[in-house]
Image: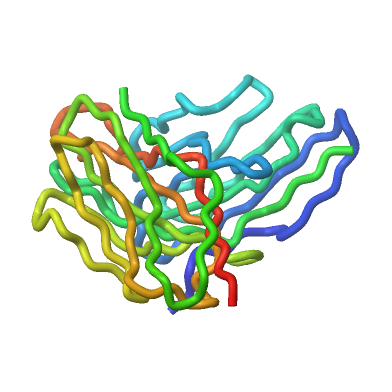
Length: 117
Length: 119
């Protein structure tokens, strides 16, 4: 079956421009996560969506970052007024609901490589 | 707070020799632990996970890891390295979501270990 997909795969933008990244989770997965991976480093958690609950935005690095998700479908991560330090690979993951007492495997998309010039 | 430390940023082994990638964790709660692998230009793939069942966990491609609570370690091993094992490996910790808590089950990644396999 189809995995997590992300678009675009690569994005080059100029400093100060806004960018929008898209994630299509696996059908039926209610939990969706965004992570950022800077060159040579591990992943940093950004934001989490679970069904219709309020998202966990605790990982967003600044108010230039925002994300939306409609129901249990597509999510978009928006970065306003991009800076060079925003250059990274942005990864999306989805999983079945985060039930009490159970940690579900997260399935990752291929990522969007963002380069801010 | 939860954290993960991968003790080696780079490990180099010869093909056919054992692999050991070291990981220590810190967690105030009973952790779930994972190892993910990332091949160049490919997405992250789950190798194995520990969720409080058997302390010795077997994963894909011959990898296994042992949870040692007394040492707060979760080292990844493989008896015999293959060229195709060359990749970036991440040790990951997550807290199990508690009923009524705000915990999201988000993953906390280590900095990664690059495994090089020489012919």
